[in-house]
Image (cartoon, rainbow, N blue to C red; front, side):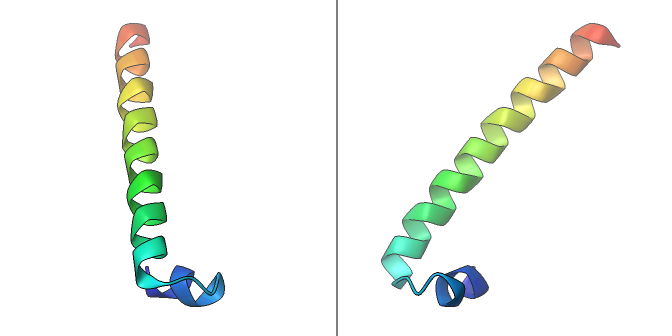
Length: 41
């Protein structure tokens, strides 16, 4: 989190919003992938 903040020269609020959105997208993509994998296996 702090490395991303420093690397992209963002404020804490901007980093928190970006990080939250990234984690949300990652979790949704992950659950969809698991559900699709469960259909195949």
